[in-house]
Image (cartoon, rainbow, N blue to C red; front, side, top):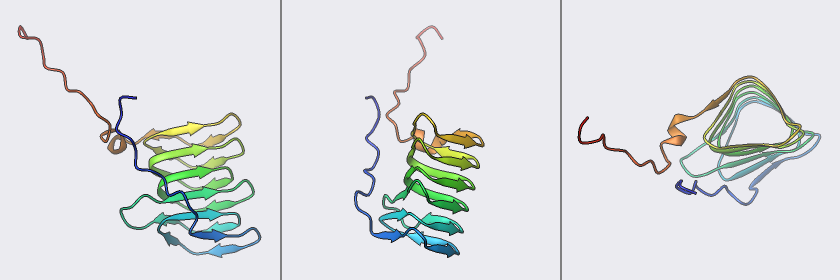
Amino acid sequence: MFFNKPTKPHNRIDCLIGAGTRIEGNILFNGGLRVDGHVRGNVIASGESACTLVLSENATIEGEIRVSHAVINGTVVGPVHASEYLELQSKSRVRGDVHYARIEIQVGAVVDGQLMHDQAGAEKENVLALKPAAGD
């Protein structure tokens, strides 16, 4: 393509919130986080390095999500901010605005909110500035 390659998502899981686990409070993480349980609080990637959130089919997050990469197949009640890449899989349900630089939405995914392209993420792309014609 004509774009810079986005940073690679974190390809391993450093932390798991298992099925049947319920957390009430904000989560700050580095690396990879997989949620199979229920989180009531914000889930935020700390630091400047690429961080990946994976939300499984039966998982729920009630709160804001701020990460570089996310793969969502569960339920989110709150805004989602993916500064690099967001994948909404077929069983994902998002009630809140979705901010993204690059997005993939599979058939069956539901978003009850606005989809907003992140201009800051778009600025990372190679864009060729065109000069006006000599007569202009």
